[in-house]
Length: 399
Image (cartoon, rainbow, N blue to C red; front, side, top):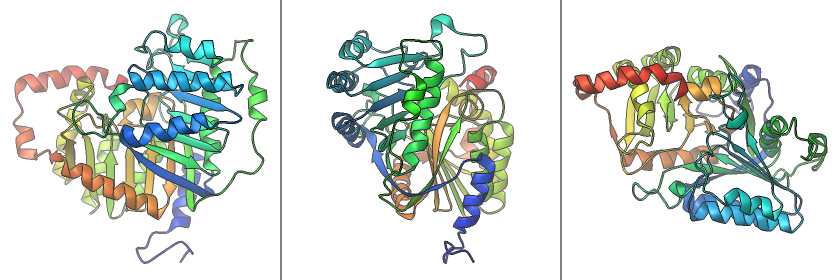
């Protein structure tokens, strides 16, 4: 029995070995992961971290849209740059296309070094649908934030009604921050590859502390996937998580469009006695085509004994996998083909009993605000709905 194997039979040493073999990156010890729930808890710590920066601020995001919070971030980043702290912002050219006019000017006039990931004006063949979906903020190389949240008014509040999206973000301290910074630097290096006016990537790579602080007890693996074709580290991470589950598997996602192989893996898990549950948006879904495109996978899952909860009050945007109440997987990746096969993502595989307990309590609260999809009623959906589903499946790889 390993020293990390307790009464529940969870063998931490085996889990670490399997994830390291599947992904090719090591776990680090001594991390602290703090769950931040909804905009009221998420945005203030991020803005405080920017305000307190002394050496560097590095922000990478897929979504940067509109609203007062978007203006507050632009001003905070510009103010910090005016103090002489190097501030770098990288925005995905597709995801941040709805950004309000003037926000980039606010940042650049303050001295922020701002770049666009794969600009649409000079897109190369094959890159138009392959985006960076990562959400990363790293301050001074010591504290990082990641999760599902974009910089926009939709994420403000506390998920009280349809105007306030439900989401999670995470504050990370410890050696795992290095992996988050690598996620930023990898995308930044591509964005400035032909830009002689940018800070050389070598200068950024050699900056930072030699030995990070170790403020907690969480073991964390940082998983980064690249926007390419076919298999990715995120896909490997998901398949391993499903295969490891022996008692429970809980999956929260904003967009549920798995491929047939992954659907069958979930069904097999349920048939072998694992309590498999999926939590996703439904009435307040922001991208209805994604919901339609994944609908053909619902009946096979329900038939296998999988429970599917659909969140009622507002758009549900959190991304989370909980395995046997012991392994927490969080970050930017949804449970869809885009995240598994196309987009640049970053996730954390966390072994931390305290975090797992917090997330399990959140799960219970979210399920209480949800309704189950019942197999009998699902089979009775009408012809018009089925026709829309068939049409949406044509674009499933894109949503």
